[in-house]
Image (cartoon, rainbow, N blue to C red):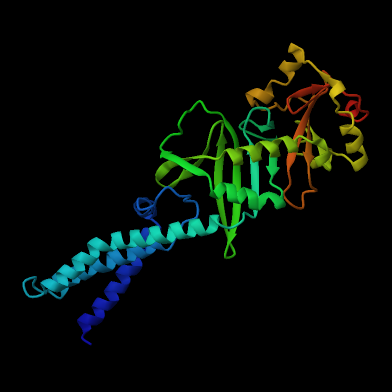
Length: 351
């Protein structure tokens, strides 16, 4: 083997490594955007990641080979046109071939993952009054929101309904910006030991999902919508919750000041939340609870608003979570769009 051929092999390998590195670093976004042009509207959160590097390596190899042919080996095109044309063809068509293989692999992977039964589905309710946030600094807050974990026995049914949703259209924007977002759910799968996830948004009249190429896929599934509504109703059953803690703006970040209810305290407290204790809120009471609809942070100076976090589990595993709000000034409890005047020995002791 001549020295020139050795240099050519080393040069081609070096160019392949350079192309691989550039395509997974500096030009990563550009290469991914190109590859995604080959995709149909699918979930693009977990795509096969070997193709950007492969495409970069192939392109630089073929480009380097042209340079060697022309400037180092100095082969005239007239007598070596086949080598030039083959290399040019590979340079031009390899992106198309890689794009096609990437499409097949990505679609097969996504379809294979979403045919399995989800390992967990978490539903976050996005309508007003489903979260309470306490200010902890000028630009940040923490708190609680209503979050439903789909029971394990219902995962297969949910998975089937998600797979069979009817695709209506794909668009850059949803059909109507006036449609209220009701809930967002995170769906986790496991495929060959690897985590795979999907995010769906539930609107007033449809479901949506961010898919490839910056578009939104719009789906219809009355059966899935009905199942979600049933879960929401079930989550308002207070007998579901076995753990609770009470916090306000001063204790939200200080665990030592938080009040964790015993089983008996929780049972006694929830037994007071009865229909006969419902009240029609006065304008003053509504003003005290306005943060629920405006999604304002409760300021650190407001110490008379308390959140009672309700949990289905102890925290060892993910579980459905809900909350109540108590205003010490008006002695009013809020839960699930209802206001209550309750007589519990626990609440007057809050400080």
